[in-house]
Length: 332
Image (cartoon, rainbow, N blue to C red; front, side):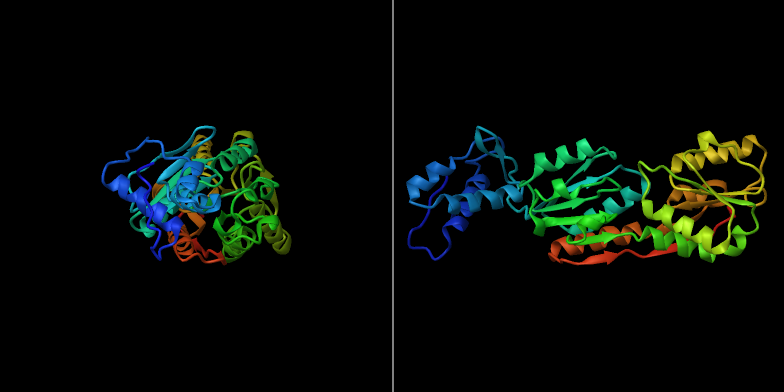
């Protein structure tokens, strides 16, 4: 109880005095990581405060990651870094090379005294719901990558609406939230349109597309492009189910299938950019180097991470479409 001492005649709001008192106790070493704090009711009763006043102080410390609540036991010190201003929850679908670039750019742009904890739902709605419900109320901001999961608003609404930021894909029922996103339908259509002359040199355009993981906008843009330009086309679930043939040009959305198709191409003794073509989505160092370079339609993931950090630090409530660009290399 001695850790929380308030000055009755001070003009500083009581909740800020509680915060300052706990921070001071941590700095002096009187409170250490893992130590239990006085209860809300104990502080309220001793200092004749409302419960909401004490709760406001504890919520701010909790959002900054200084303290944590343990159900049925109370509040404990979780960090002795009292300079920590924000603690951010990040929920990605999965980690790959280009999302790692996004994440690193995000971290680099946040500056000091901001802590980020990252989680992955791996396109599993139960994991998605569990992670959000378990972490609601513990962070100063929530970055959510819903991917193509449906009805995510039902669980996201449990988070403070002014602290949620949607990343990468934005569903119709999430349009009220600030977001930085890719316009997959437009990006794929415009990128393929620039490549129309080269694509017509091949017999068939094939899209490797997994409905469970890939953005539906890519599929829409693909169909729109093929219909408008009378392109012979096919959608394939996986290269495992197909054998590349001379005259095929593939759109490949992930690195694993990219490697598989190159392996199968060599097994069939096909020459890249002569017998068969490859276009990929989302640029990476691998695609810059492999087979002399793979043509990509890609957003700028570093810019996405930097802009996301700015949105959170400035508390901007906006929706931003991240730009896409076509990088033509030797694969077509």
